[in-house]
Every structure is written in C-alpha cells, then in structure tokens.
Length: 610
Ligand SMILES: *[C@@H]1O[C@H](CO)[C@@H](O)[C@H](O)[C@H]1NC(C)=O
Ligand SMILES: *[C@@H]1O[C@H](CO)[C@@H](O)[C@H](O)[C@H]1NC(C)=O
Ligand SMILES: *[C@@H]1O[C@H](CO)[C@@H](O)[C@H](O)[C@H]1NC(C)=O
Ligand SMILES: *[C@@H]1O[C@H](CO)[C@@H](O)[C@H](O)[C@H]1NC(C)=O
Ligand SMILES: *[C@@H]1O[C@H](CO)[C@@H](O)[C@H](O)[C@H]1NC(C)=O
Ligand SMILES: *[C@@H]1O[C@H](CO)[C@@H](O)[C@H](O)[C@H]1NC(C)=O
Ligand SMILES: *[C@@H]1O[C@H](CO)[C@@H](O)[C@H](O)[C@H]1NC(C)=O
Ligand SMILES: *[C@@H]1O[C@H](CO)[C@@H](O)[C@H](O)[C@H]1NC(C)=O
Ligand SMILES: *[C@@H]1O[C@H](CO)[C@@H](O)[C@H](O)[C@H]1NC(C)=O
Ligand SMILES: *[C@@H]1O[C@H](CO)[C@@H](O)[C@H](O)[C@H]1NC(C)=O
Image (cartoon, rainbow, N blue to C red; front, side):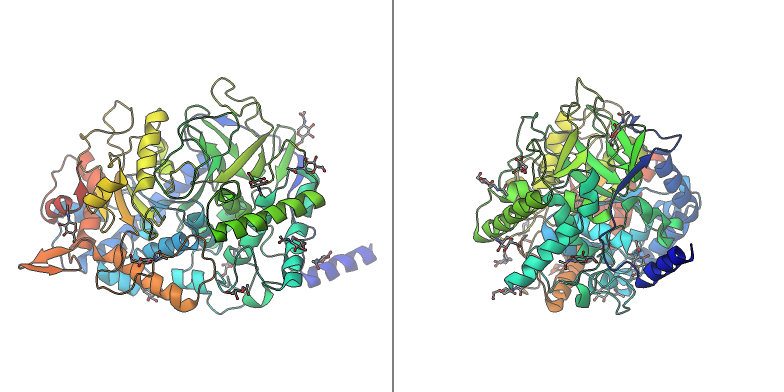
C-alpha cells in the first residue's frame, strides 16, 4: 500500500515527461449515452453556450466594438448604434468567422485578420475594426486555418502576437516555433529518424484499440507547433508534446467557461470510395480527390456533425471513436489529431507536381512504411487518410454512401474545393447574420486568393441545399472575381437578398451577409508582397511573420481605394463604419428599418450585386 503510494508520488513528481501512456481508451458507456443524434439541429450544449454568450458577453463586446467604430469619427446612422448598443442579447447580430486553408500562409493570414478585429489591439481599435472578434460566436477553420483556430482555442485565447511568438513565460504556450519545419525537423538523418520513432511511439496507446495511419503521426508532428507542451528547447525532446489535450476538454478553459471564446469548428472532408461526382476544378491546388457531392463533416467543441441532408447526424465529440452504445471510447478527440485530419492531404500531395511535393510525398510514404511496420493495419485501410471508427454505421443507408463502412477515411477539409469553411455558418440554428470570410488560399500563380472557394460553396449548395440557409450569389469564375476587383478589397455578398440565391430554400430567409476579406493582392504602397508565400513553406523567421502580419493588418483595415476631393487614396476612412453597417444589416432588415447615411454609401462601395 505504502509502496504503491510512493510510486504514485514518484510518478506525479516526474510529471508527464513521456507520452508512452497517453492515448484514447475504451470503457463502459455512461448510462445515458446516445451514440447518434439525428437531424440538422445543433446540440443542446451548443445552444446553451450561445445563450450564455449572448446574455453575458455580447452586450459588452458589441458596446466596446461600437466605441471603436465611433472612434473613427464617421457619423453612423442611428440604427447602427441602436442595434450595437442593444442590451438584449436576442437583438444583437450573430457574427461568424471562417478561416481558409493554405498551410502556414493561411494560418498567418487568419491570425493577421483576426488581430485587426481584436479589441486587445490598440491599432485595430484605432482603425474602427477592433472588437468584432470578441463579438463573434463561431470561428471555423480548416487545414492551415484549423492549425490557427485550434491553437488559439487551446492556448486560452491569447493575443495573436502571443499566440504566434509565445509570451516568454516557459509555462505558457510557446508559440508556433517556426524555425523548425513540420515534417522534416532535421537534415541530420539520425536526428530525423529519432523524431520519426518518437512520433510513432506517441500513438502506441491509440494503436492498441483503434486504426492508426499517417494522419496520426501528422497530428503529433503538428502538436509540436500548435499545442501546448513544446518549447524551442524541447522540440526534439522525447516529451509528451501536448498529447492528451482533447478538443472536447477545451470547454473547461477559463475563456470558454466565461464564454469569451467563439465556438471553434474544424472542418474535415470524407474520402469515400463509393462516391463519384464533379471534382471542383476552380483552384490550382492539384486535382481534388473529394467530389463536391460528398457529405462533409465538422468537429465543433461538442460533436462531430454532418449537417448535410443525406446524413444529418451527430455523435458526441468526447466519445469519438465509439461505434456502439456499450463500449465507449474517450480521448480520441485529441486536438491536434483533429486539426491534423483537417490538414491531411497526403492522399493528394502524392500526385501534385513539384520538387517539394515530391519530397513531402516521399516523407509521407516513408511514414506509411514505418507506420505499417510498427502497427500493421488491415489491407482494407488506407495509410494516408485519417481513420475514424464510423459512429454512423448503419445510419441513413439509402442516402449516406459510407453507411456500411466500419471506418470513415477523413482528409483535408478543403479537398472538395471549399477551402474557406463557410458551410458551418449556414446551419439554420446558428442563425448567423454576417460571416467574415478570411481567404488565404493560393488560387493565382503568385499565391494570392482569387475567390475559388466561394464558387465551390456556391456550386455545392446546388447539390446539398436542403435544410441549410441560403448562400449569397457570388461570381461563377475567377476571371469575374478579378474583373470586378472583388479580391483586392473587402467585398460584401448578399446585400440584396432578393437577388438570386444559390440555395433552394424557398422561404424568405435571406441567409447571412458575407464579408469577404481575401489575401488578394500585393500592398497598395508598392512594397514587396509578403503575404503570398507558398503553401508548402513551413520555416519562417520572426521578421517574415511580422511583415506578413503587418500587410495583413492593412488588408483588413484599409477597405477600398477611394476618391476623396478628387484625389485617389489607398485607405477608405469609412471602412470601419462600413464593416459595422454590414454587421448590423440583417438585424436592420428584420426590424424593417431602411439603410441610410453612410451605410448606403458603404453598400454601394462594397457590395457585389452580380
Ligand atoms: C495552454 O497554455 C496556456 C498558457 O499559455 C494556458 O492558459 C492554457 O490553459 C493551456 N491549455 C491547455 C489545454 O492546457
Ligand atoms: C536543411 O538544409 C537546407 C539546405 O541547406 C536548409 O535550407 C534547411 O533549413 C535545413 N533544415 C533543417 C531543419 O535544418
Ligand atoms: C525512412 O525512415 C527510416 C527510419 O527512420 C530512415 O532510415 C530512412 O532514411 C527514411 N527514408 C527516407 C526516404 O526518408
Ligand atoms: C521516449 O521515452 C519512452 C519512455 O519514456 C521510451 O520508451 C522511448 O524509447 C523513448 N523514445 C526514443 C525515440 O528515445
Ligand atoms: C462495441 O464496440 C466495441 C469496439 O469498440 C466492440 O468490441 C464490441 O463488441 C461492440 N459491442 C457490441 C454489442 O456491438
Ligand atoms: C503515390 O502514388 C504512387 C503512384 O500512384 C503510389 O505507388 C504510391 O504508393 C503513392 N504513395 C503514397 C504514400 O500513397
Ligand atoms: C500493412 O501491413 C499489413 C500486414 O503486413 C498488410 O496486410 C497491409 O497490406 C499493409 N497495408 C498497406 C496499405 O500497405
Ligand atoms: C508574390 O507576389 C509578387 C507580386 O505579384 C510576385 O512577384 C511574387 O512572385 C509572389 N510570391 C510568391 C511566392 O508567389
Ligand atoms: C479595379 O481596380 C483598378 C485599380 O485600382 C481600377 O483601375 C479599375 O477601374 C477597377 N475596376 C473596377 C471594375 O472597379
Ligand atoms: C497590433 O497589431 C499590430 C499590427 O499587426 C502589431 O504590430 C502589434 O504588435 C499588435 N499589438 C498587440 C498588442 O498585439
């Protein structure tokens, strides 16, 4: 007895130095366990979270935001102030933010735009945009965007500077540690081999009960950068590197308990061998392997959900890995495994041209070999996808193509072409009024965003419209985006809800207004472009990052090029006010108030009407 207490004490003192014993486990399910919830509604937990946030956080957050907008000195129509000052949570706008994929470039771009919306950044407040972040209820991200939002959520919502660079406190999140590459951490073959052994060992516990793949190893590699538990000094050390940080556990962090954080949503794609269909051609990311008619999945704080009508089913995130009501898994929803799934394009990179892609493909091929040698997987499983025991086995057999599969093979959330995760913002219960779409993907040859991801969502809404809210009409080609300058300045879509809507919902719901902020062009002042790095670049110096953040800050705070007194100026002094006009516009419409004052000017300047 005493001996075992001593051993326990010793273990506690040694601390979690190794991940050898960390991983998902299985046990009896709780008595009230329900594996699958059907329908296109959100969970009771999400309803509760939003209600609490509306009541306790949003009135103050919107008030602070309004102060920032008013600080620009632009005269606002009375309705804008009345709406933002409303002390009743029910009358305040609902704001969602979607951050695209695109590797580190997209992660920095996402962080840079959110910094420009952050009440904690004095420069952002001065521009009249600071404070909107604190008023958002949902924050979706996929691929590189999911690294950013997952990292932000698990680090307890620090400022973007602290998130990316750490705050110097060794016990805090140490930043993204961008002096090390993600996959190949060393040119020293022995050191690289040790790293490969370590990441493989870190999934040993999982491999006892669950399928494992390169997706798991990838998640562990990412964890060294985007989750707590690693510092520059320990990046190559054999420690736990944030293993055991569960997405479903984040609700216990102080900024979630206080409802300050928006609900993070990670989007992933299903890689189904049963589905053939239109492959979205709109971007230069190489062939996309996921046809647009594939049901898509999201991992929110509470559930893994498919809101598409063909499945319309949800399973508790906390018990991901579970396939029946008697034996329940816990610990499967490891935060960086989920983010790694959202950025798992190993199935795709293999056929992409380019020396770097070839090197990455070789590295993942090597991981495939090492993985299967260490933890042999059945020949029926792919090694390059992230494999989830299928909680929806037997569900919707007539319409869900993978209903009969025991494992769902998941991949990068942008493989269907919808690289800005907009669909979570169209879920009816979320009642999002305005979506800030932060697009940092490389649609153009020089790695700028061109609008393809919006086109993909517009196309997809024609395939899966039922039960979701309408998506505003957007142009149908990159050329049309470019010709109308929609990516070189912020653009509003859905300004006139009577214009043709992509969704087939026939009711009068106008759907959310879309504020599109693309990483679309070099700086207006002629300075060298810094925000358009390649998707594959994974080593960055602090100077490079600060340069990107600074240029992104300008993109998000300058608005359009405008004429003032016959002179062309690079920055619209009314942009802060214009953004606020967009934020309140759906509430205004519901209240039956006409747009007026600067908001009329703003909508004429920023709306795309087709
Ligand atoms: C990660 O570290 C931050 C401090 O930087 C802390 O506030 C937060 O609670 C930690 N998150 C987890 C999941 O332990
Ligand atoms: C590996 O070598 C290349 C070429 O010398 C260099 O650019 C890169 O930074 C090195 N990578 C690491 C992880 O040391
Ligand atoms: C694959 O991994 C093994 C063991 O870590 C290593 O010896 C070998 O060099 C690697 N091969 C390639 C092509 O990276
Ligand atoms: C890492 O540490 C664990 C136990 O703490 C040990 O079993 C394992 O061999 C170590 N891995 C490497 C690559 O040294
Ligand atoms: C439930 O799932 C577990 C594996 O997760 C399996 O071992 C068990 O046999 C299943 N039980 C039933 C009743 O299907
Ligand atoms: C990459 O593609 C080639 C040819 O299609 C295939 O033989 C190889 O197994 C693939 N590699 C991986 C890691 O999937
Ligand atoms: C993994 O190894 C097992 C057992 O050796 C083998 O049956 C299976 O085909 C391998 N999987 C792949 C994808 O190579
Ligand atoms: C970034 O944009 C500039 C200006 O269009 C271009 O010259 C440069 O090649 C681009 N950089 C990359 C990495 O694509
Ligand atoms: C697009 O922007 C360019 C450069 O600012 C300008 O010359 C052109 O007139 C704009 N086109 C449209 C359709 O607004
Ligand atoms: C505010 O944003 C600017 C522009 O990116 C940045 O230089 C500054 O460090 C930020 N301030 C804080 C407190 O994060």
